[in-house]
Length: 418
Image 1 (spheres, rainbow, N blue to C red):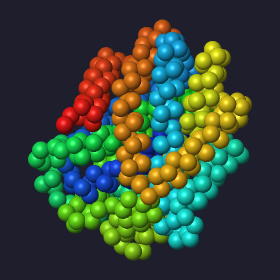
Image 2: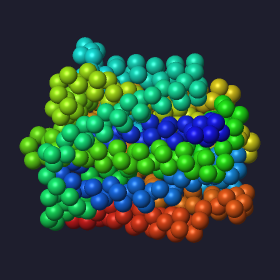
Image 3: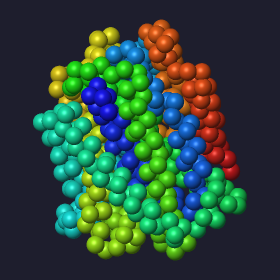
Image 4: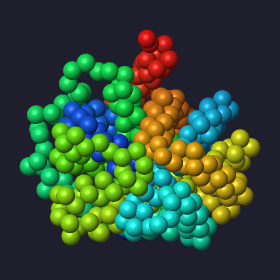
């Protein structure tokens, strides 16, 4: 591997760190436990259809030296306003969801006496402290380690559980007639599979921060490889968690607890029942670390995006990292901490509701953000040789249509169907 490529690698792993969290540990495991392998096809399709929208983030950054938010600005203030509105509508629930699950894991792994609420508050303070002291460099180093650890342990557990899986359940949709409850869960599952489209903006910002850190401007090929490593890895891990849920919990009558602590204990038990009790502290720590990496990346992603959004509204050129140089970053970080804590306090005993609300909001906003990303990579600032190929653009258009149709169907089913 060339030194230049090594300097380019990093944002893709941050993407994986942000993605492999609630969507995998919570939603994918729930899917396997409730439906066996029936939703494997849906998860595969979600990853395929969202590939284009996510890939346009690092592609735009590599092509222009600016973030996707500059691409939005060039589309007009309406595009920036739409992104700002969508971000504000999701940021507190997203941050609350990932923090609450992480707090539950911390309580289960360490046997803490503190309430999950106060553990969540301490986690938020810890994440803010890490970002204040170490900025992007610490974020990059921490996530690299924890993603590798969880990936290896999850692959090992999945291989061991394969003989226990009922392969007859493998399919595209659950058998029988789909009821509203199942459809709403499928929407929540797809909403963060592999993650929310918002992360494409974060990915472009992380690409620029990595460029600023190393002094190396990645080529289009290097950025694409970095993205593909992270994206394909997250997709495979999603399938692993479905298999784990299907192999250990499907058909047993066991349902997941609705509190963070109870759910976290079940996730740790899921691994240890396959690998053996000796693995409980190792797996518990790995799951906690990966959820912590998710919480940390989300804690950085929203302030980084919103502070850049503010600069774009002012038409200020901020091609590099804004962290540490922009008061808006720290203001948004503080607001995010208090807002997330308030949501956690409100929905402390309703983990599944909180997760489903956060993921469903992402499901409904996905077609809008995908459309903005599509237009951005076709802007005049992106030279012809750096624009996506015909097949990727076709996939992008198809995914926007599919996401929009299903979002409208969800709204009709939720509010207008008897």
